[in-house]
Length: 92
Image (cartoon, rainbow, N blue to C red; front, side, top):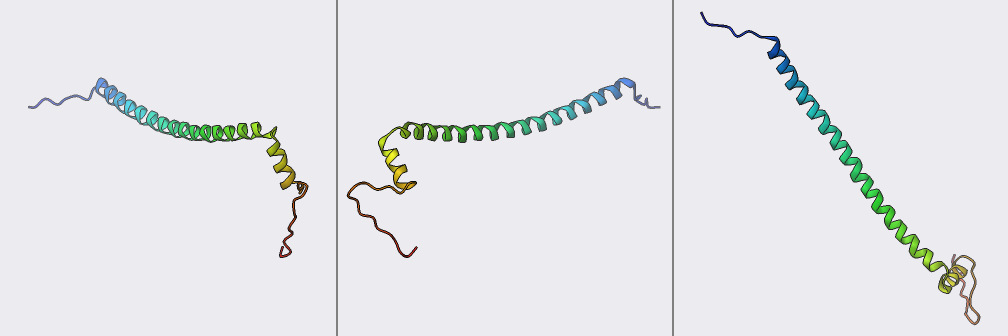
């Protein structure tokens, strides 16, 4: 007669360990993918904030200039220089 291999406790433990290892690797990979997405999103946010910061620093350096004061006076307050002619659009 042929000998039948016994299904021992050690065989069961080995199969269980392999299944647990496979599940753990799969679960960790999904967590890494989620983390990588968050990191790339944060890097994009950092880049856009750095661009905003550079624009604000440029604007900050222009605030104390005469050209900026003149532009604000013309655009927001409606002032004109002496000797300039004012044209009013009557179609509006």
